[in-house]
Length: 180
Image 1 (cartoon, rainbow, N blue to C red):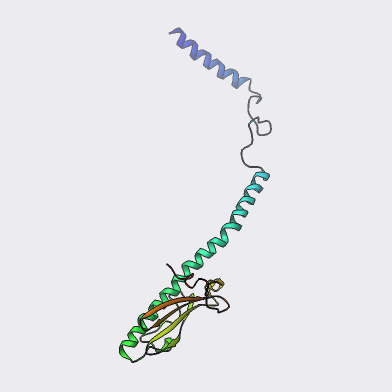
Image 2 (cartoon, rainbow, N blue to C red; image 1 turned 90 degrees about the horizontal axis):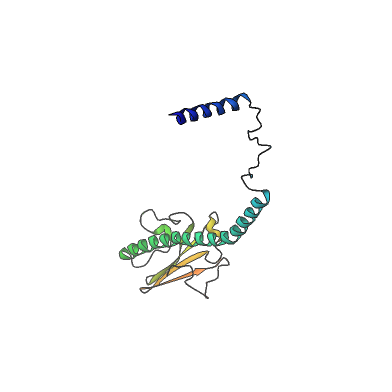
């Protein structure tokens, strides 16, 4: 029991001594702290900014190309809709429609997401040719390799092709713009 009371007394005495003789020398102040600084230096931040900048320069064009490829699906969807309307026209008339406006229903003049303008470029009793051209007001207009996608049907044979920004038929890789 004595030892328990000594501990209580010594703890109590220690507290009294600290309180009575406190002159703030034992307290840690920000100016006299021996603790290392937390955070980053300006050099470290500049290195990180530089690395992120280099990654962005490399990754952004690749990202843009992926977005352009995904928007080509919009042209394909629009052309598929026109193909269905063409077959409906042909089932009721001796030839295919020679213009989008002469198709049944409210024919779409643009693709579903409005990135492409749709047009019939040729039509006869044996087939048709239709084109989806990137709209000048769409970000897809920057797709210089595949500015227009084209589908042609002749006597039951379907062919796909693409045109570049100059309007030239892509002969090097005709199906570069179409999914495989």
